[in-house]
Image (cartoon, rainbow, N blue to C red):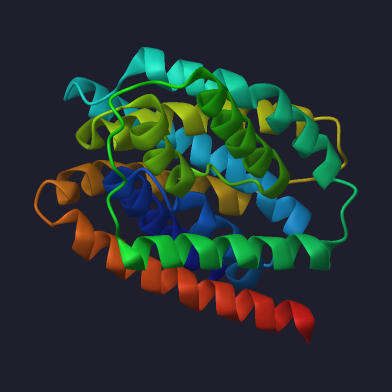
Length: 247
């Protein structure tokens, strides 16, 4: 199977994850770029930001049309993460590849466990300013350092910390992902990382199409089922990445 076809297939899977769950897209993107398309960890985390931004914008439009985005809460949450995202984005360029890979594998394992356990966070009904700032800052740092959107962290945090209804948390998380990823990408602009656009563009194309399909899929398949499927996939990816990094 050619690299071009692999890019198309991986992009479709990423789009489905972001469109259906508002999470999991970049957790799939980075290992796909490394192990299927031959990107280095630094190249993969930077390219992941580009792919996730474009795909998340597409999915956000679909959720916004359905009235499932809480703009004020999302922007408040995202604002707290902007500076940490920028700082972590610069720092990541100086981290050894094996450390980045192991850190990403650990994060993927955490995401997989959370999805498999599929617990719905309680809606607090109140908004705590310090907790919102802390959660937003932490998510921004993760985004900048590992090139991930952090949707699997944003969704429960939006529900529990900012009292966003579960039905709108997925759409709102996409807004947070876009803001953090844009800042993290800008912070990496001065690095010497080069990107293979012949692989990235077809990846983005099918990811965008997959995002629309993922939004429709979320209305037909229970969130619990979707989370278990993607959670199992992420645990497999985490194991493979961790094992490969230690060899």
